Image: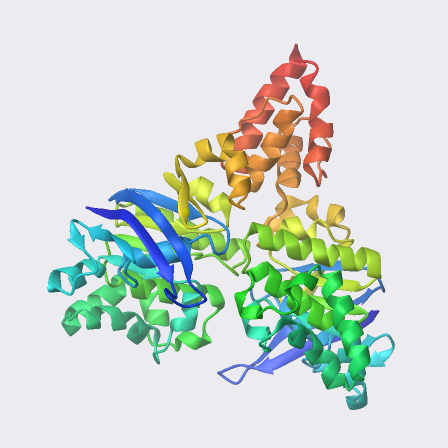
Length: 279
Length: 288
């Protein structure tokens, strides 16, 4: 899906020096993969995400979206049609007065015929479970519902990949779960590639793959188990690990013979149960 | 000193087709010295409630009294009492507007009518409170700072007004774990120094469990639970679920382990504490 080659993004700061928000990042993201990108504030993870649909362009290196280079101006629109983007604040990205018009906005701009638009809106709303709200005003919906409408708007453009930049940061636990369930279902059932930028480690654990960006560098790249089984390293990078991983590794370090790489409550339970039967 | 919320009801858009009861008979008292956490799903009424506490909006029915003074009044006394309750909104950095950090923080005390000498003293004090070095940051543009620093400037602006009660609405939203810890260790420090009482609205149950001495759970415009955070998290899971809120991730993991018969320190609020206790029980288990 994405082939990132030595991607660097530098910009001029106030005092005239050059600052590299991204510095020589290379990686490949396969079609159908669910990738989480984590990093502290200012690490460059959002800048990275914005390159994936050519919202910003590399100052050095290149990025190919299904073989199309973002450096070729005529590729920009095909790339943005393939790669949709959902932002953090649902109130800043919804514009229409009625939900179905909101969802139709993207395909209308692509010049899709009316009949086709109607089908796409129906399909997109069904996929995010918001069909019953089609005649509602987006302003009257909850945060989680608004984000699902934003996702439907992207789906109506029939993308191959959706980039979500902290889509749940402003939501309550119920809204977060709604959005995460929706995104996982799209990935599983529709085969849509997902790149999720997040501060919530519980969300990153559910991905196929986790990229850790630190000070503009790609410093870790692996499965959640590989990335989160070293809490010390993650904490040194200013990040957290999920609770079960943290507990397991602390117990392991204290000398209890448990596996240090538990990712879920269930795995931690499995690891600790043998000790209990001996009490 | 106390904030007395006397059976308040608040109706948005009364008499229009959009009429909505945001608060339905909330009655509680917040005493000086408390650290109150407020949780609830979006639309539960928590933001409407806190806006009442410093008189930004007035109840449709009922009264809000600070030290016995009704905030809805127009007297000088009522206005002065409103100033004793400071409010830090969500994403407060969006409200920064001045050219320099120092001027932005000075806006509040200047409006209170402080003389320039007092204003400067308060700016210095507020900046050291939030951990921003005066000499480094006072003359900088607030818009050239990082997200976490901007938020501290915004919080300093409220602190410079020297409130008795400080209300924070999701102060850690959008911050990374380090930024979050910094903000909260600071808040905890101020609270422990007795600088003011804190009322914290958050979706982050970890922070609530660690910091609050009292927890209010809002649902459908009512305060449905009011008590010690751990009592609520451990013994009222059904009500919490109905209110659309969760227990802290650590508590959730510990309760899942408990269900499988593992003896856990269910009241633990940090992983270190939980790991220590778990290790002690499990190690003893293996030795016999």
